[in-house]
Length: 124
Image (cartoon, rainbow, N blue to C red; front, side):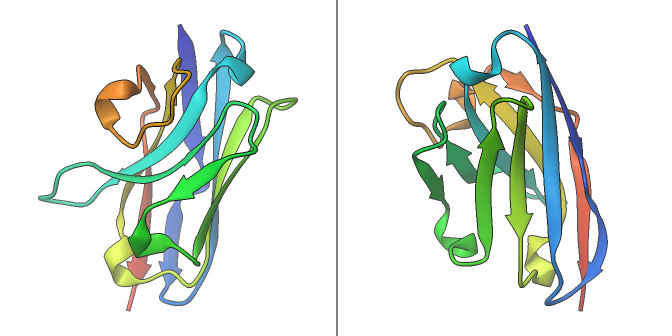
């Protein structure tokens, strides 16, 4: 089992920045690919970013490319999502997730463990 706890969400004006953190406990953190997903009201959960187990390979979805960055610190068992130039359409609950996979994935079904989510609200 892996327990995940997100933090860092909040209310920010358009153009502002937030950094989300996700602290993991339980199994060996470096054995898991990590991802960030988000779900806006009335919409399905969507992929945002993922990072490889070692942190040397990252991928973000097109809608946040150039604005969001994913990173991890395996010594601290933590994954981060740096969000810059935020837009109102980024408003959502953001979830981190862990996948014990050797391949990269943007599919939520490949992630076995999920945090409880943190709310991000961007005002215009």
